[in-house]
Length: 354
Image (cartoon, rainbow, N blue to C red):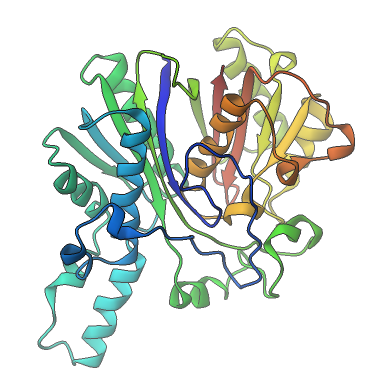
């Protein structure tokens, strides 16, 4: 089950809006969480409509248009999105209105825009696309579910091209809540020094990333998504190794065929063990990591896929993203494997080829 990435639109905490460049200028964040670098929305959305849109809706529509422009497509055959928490900002706004107004005289806009499928609906309205439209909210598997749906549509020839996206946002209120758990670091650190702070928790982030998928390759293709796999609550590192062995064998590859492994390291001493285990005992190749650039969140797999696809297209791994640089060797990048998990529960594997 193979599809090709024809175009990408990514709005993230890094300078990723221009699809022609790949992490040429790195942005360091010295805050409790990392927020997106927003574009000039007037380039993508009517200024009159902007006034009623929340931040995430504006980013979603803009990223989708960037993606379609990059792919040279006007109208996709389907729109599929994945999100862990949906539009957190609008949800908080509506709940605060209930408290402030004593549950009376509530404005409906924030409530309407708080549902998880708002982005896919707003994108469809903006593009005047009346084709298949779906949203998945499966915690750490949200983006992976959307991607799998898109790949199946193309395989079954129900659509020639599919717009697949993953999105999540972080707000001050939400951060203050999750900071009470062990998932977020208590101390404020520099995002680029994430792995130097071997303590409990990570830094959280956000992004909106869209991919234009098709069943045919051309000169503008970023990479081929050869397959994806999800693993729910594996019991041991040995089970994960066995799953990867099986996954690679199903795709006529071995671990020695992988030119680059992208790991979801997030600086959390409670959950990073599997990544170090794979780097120490399983793979013997080049490694990269990415969460110091994006932060961690439910659909961070979409940022990981963007990163992996660009390493193949540009045939390089940016210095800032190299893991264990002392052992890094320059070589052609043909096969890339992404391994990521969300809170040690939802594990996902992406296999990309040139």
